[in-house]
Length: 163
Image (cartoon, rainbow, N blue to C red; front, side):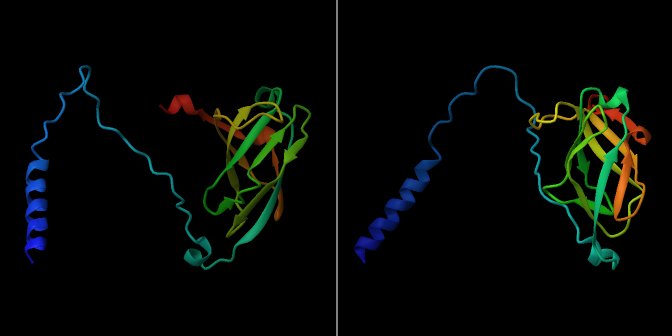
């Protein structure tokens, strides 16, 4: 019993002196502002359960040549938006200056979308993923196998304009 009492008393003394360790002085310089932390997590809702509509797969083909937009190549990244979200391996496509599409666009939707949006940038076909330029909103033509004519897309503001 004495042994347990001695251990308890030792721990009590150590904890009492633990707060008496001096804090080092602050580093000179400007005082940093609050650090904002961003948490990236999925916000996907089970839209089939919420709407009562079944999920269906749609495939898209992008065609057309808009030299002012495509230039030497156009990389498009599908942006999830109700009523659809993209399948992970099929949301990046490349459009050549001659209108040839490389990659697959497959989305899952609770109903046929009228418009879909992409983040876009000009790059070669084999370019690594990098920061995109802005947003592109495109009308969808057709049903399950829909088509997007790039010349009918509306270019939104570049990301730098949204700062």
